[in-house]
Length: 407
Image (tube, rainbow, N blue to C red; front, side, top):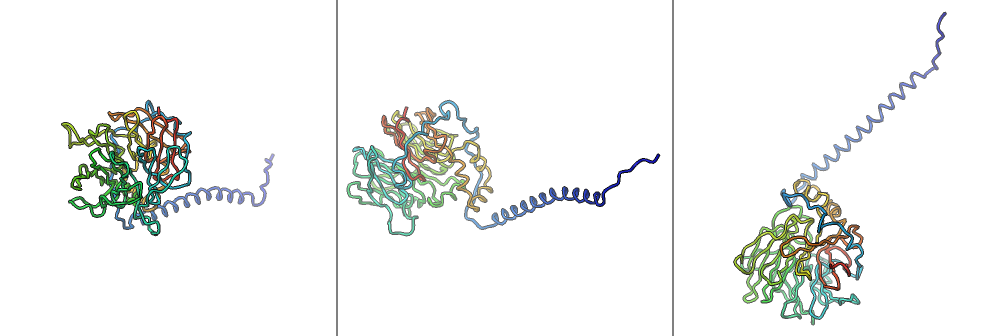
């Protein structure tokens, strides 16, 4: 008997062939789009790389050791998370603080004002204006570090990033230029980013120039380049002379004196390190490393009420992004040209952190805002003893007060 054969429906074979071809065509199209997108991206990067730039990045390393783990004294916590914001949205960028003997606290702001407030945060007032408020340019003045003369509480010394070292009469608001950043003379090269200062009991001053190449409005270019352009400079009040005591620093930033003025500490924002310059004893005039391989990029360093030092961090190294980019100068340059550096920095500013160091440079306690809700990108700490801590920031529109943070 002949086998019964099932009749095929007209066109069914062609339909299956078309379905097979369609299923093959989709991944082919997706692959083509992917390759086209990659080619376009590569072309954009190539064009960007060929664009002229005065920035010449180099490779560097924060440390030969691994990034510190959040363990022991550096264990993550929420001690800053519940801190209180004061004067929120009243001003921008309270970078650093100085407290006078009468209890008033002074800070410099992004709008070129020197402002003071009482320790109860009831009110604030403008003491002086370091720049012309009518000027359309903001690149003429930016008050950063502040310090009082130990023997003259009427005179406030100001590290103005553009102008140099200023003195402000806190009674009258009168401003005088002590060191002209653009024309310091005496064989000292002009300064582009005067950052912090400390005044010794004899009236001499140590201050930092973060970069002799880039001003503060080009801070992205400065850290993209990754070169040691910072200095620690000494001012002699007797004859007004200047002397560079340390150079070749990676982002010379905060300055702090030991309690007995035996040495001065300088933070290197660009390489996660703190250097020490000896003022007294058999090591006078020499330098060494006080602390290195820090968990973040240190901004200012200030005295703690226990005899140690508070270090605030502008960015954190956790996750390895900053360390990776340190070894990739070409990538940093591309990110700068594409104006993506702010996004990179934002990834390193998701948490707030300050640590306390002892006299040996070891971390003895840490204060985190693990959520970043209260503060990130911390620039400075003012230790008020039993009253708590004040935290400043170059970027934030408020001051952070942590009443129960100090152990």
